[in-house]
Image (cartoon, rainbow, N blue to C red; front, side):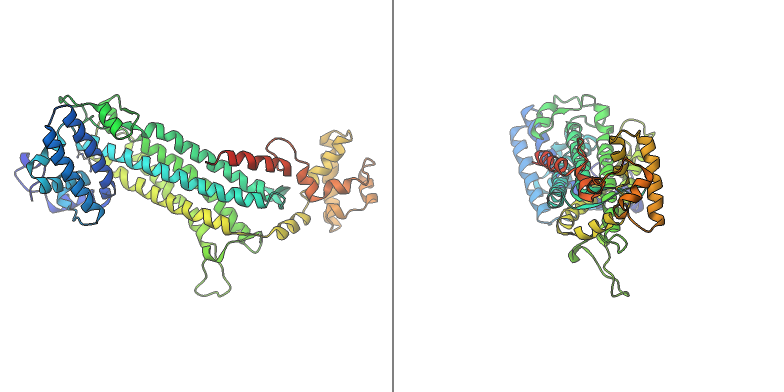
Length: 457
Ligand code: ARG
């Protein structure tokens, strides 16, 4: 079978080489973007009088026919044609004859593949932003029902101070908000057009790069042809943003897993999102959040892979760069899957507010508030801290919680204690007292929900 670049060769390509160097097995995902780029290119070739209007129409008709076949799944891609670009060009020529060969005037696969990936990633960035937003909506929805649900807040995974469960969920809302912002911001850089940079140096044809950029909805052409075909930092940026996002997903998943354990017993994930054990009949395993946590490995790996691939590559195109695609596709697919599951799983989880409340009652997480109580009465906070430390030690020794101690027991530690201490120590009061901006106090959390909603489209 003859190659599109066969003229210079006297021998056919070794079969193993053909297999080893082809990318059609994975870059066929770019088929529709490739045709979109070609349609814009051929239109421009006509407008710039590089080919005739008749030829433009023939090629456009041919490309649309090929597109139909691809959409219908009615194509046999061939390894001999190496990649999606040459497969489509071959199909075009089969469809309309030698005039199809004029499509590749004034361009190269190097600017073509870069253009395809910009188009692909732009589409996927929009899809992912919507999916992130669905997760945010699920978080806000749960948060709204649980502003006044109190659970222990932790530092060092030790009970620290009680917080509103709504507040805890909203912490993730803001992480995802920044992820969404990062995706939005990256569009500025995805939206440069490599098309017309040709192989590396530009082309002698009087092409109009702004015209193809406009037709493809890009903001502007890359100002430097070498950069245009060598740049993969728009993919690196995407993989970095994705790595940060999966970190957030993984942390949230870890908490869902912990909270589902019998040790915590704060939530129950819906049956729909759990699986059983083939041997232990009692098991209900949080497989989905475990897998979400586990997917972090491949997303970080894809980032590391591309960073390593690009490090030390001289300008301009090198075949190494063909390896840029699978990690990008994998990251897109992995995130699409993760976000699509996360939203309904969060929406359907059962929150065991009474268990959370019970946990708060059985801890010493109101200790800071007693220190604050004495500090408000004029004792320096350091001294108050020391005294309360001793009270906690005493209470643990007596097998009591701080609310169980009698007034005379408090008085042994400081004469400043009065009856109102018991109100101050009630969990609701401890949470409600935190009124600083962004705090867990109920009113602050209601305000935060309003703010969060403003950020949703
Ligand atoms: N399949 C190739 C890739 O993805 C397209 C560009 C090939 N260019 C070349 N000069 N061999 O990288």
